[in-house]
Length: 594
Image 1 (tube, rainbow, N blue to C red):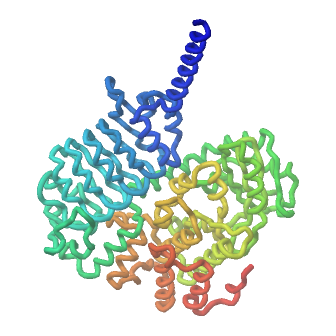
Image 2: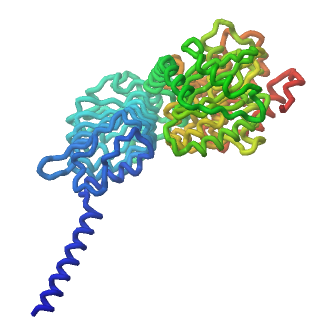
Image 3: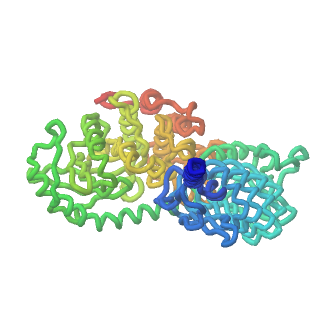
């Protein structure tokens, strides 16, 4: 019996090890597994998922999660304002006991998954302030106990599903600031809500907003798919508004929340710059070294560091998504711009240095020259040419002097040539990713220079490129870039088209005049084109306008901001059109490539 007993004990031991292994590798319950799928679909966050672990038995102690005490099933998920970027995984529909879901104030994109309709215990749903697109799923009408539904300030299109009228428990409903069109369901729960729930959707009609709809007997089956915009336009909108709604649906609008976030971000950056000076002094005094490119800095490292140590708040000339900028004056009267970028990952120093060497080798008449950098323990201090004219953003929106027509054309052509060089002629080719008026600097003669090229890609390896989007430039971004985060030359072309419209109009892409209409500057242009009034986009303070050139320039801009990337021209082609069709007469020195 001894050998047999020994074999049995060995078998039991092995079986115990196998069970421990199986439990350890698939410990999480089904709700936890669904949440891990949700986490996988999110490609960036502020670290909220750090304690979301596969090896946990239940997700009940994870950040933002609460469970039923008895069943250990998830009843509460709150991840609002955590810088989430990515899509909403359909597996979230497996949370059958979920009562509260809050994902507002993030950068989520893609569709609202129809599987959310399986969460039949859901009472409160907050998705506002993201970049969600597509339609409102009719399956949401299955949420029979839903009390709060807020999908405002996204880029949703199509109709409001008739099935939402079944949500008899609704006490709060908000679909405002989207691109919805069609008749608001007039029976059921939605009849109790007034126009504040629907504001900012130019194509909606119905009793709730006191806008009469066109009668169309062929458009009764609304839940299956969105009808054409023309079928459900308000009668007072006019025929040309059909194209307006279609364009608005295709355009990623700079909605009210986005604009407020942008303005608030600018405010924070300006105030952050004032406290940045302490960090700069610590960097310089803590063992910094200077790297110079190709003899571009005819000074000793000691002289440069000494001047950096003397900088104070009065030397701050700007701040933005990539860092605070200082004016650095040397003893011989030469002036440079010093941009401080705080490091977030020490392990990327070699990569960073190699990329900066490449950027320092790129020289062109319409690019800001990177002369060298200072490497400190906690930051990189980039040394650029100083441009006395400041940024185009300042000239357009903050300074009292007004740019005439020739000056605006000069700036547009210079910026276009700089961007074309990055796309087609420099080695390696560079996608800028952050074209905007504050990244176009001007010399004393209002000649344009493209700045910050290469930085967005450079910093992508420290933070997701989606973070770059959020920290950057609402109103300039191409629709497909907002959806996928993938940058191409054509996303730069779209941003350049927005820049042209900004220069023409003298208004920022997220100007309140557009926001009030639920549009950005591209949506406003599309509206004017639909009404054959596109010339009205021109700044009334612009003098010396040649109408033939204006029409040609508007044609170029319209092509650049097409919602379809394939329909946009290359930057080489843009420059060709600017020179041949817009600049009349064209000064000979504009043809210089260097």
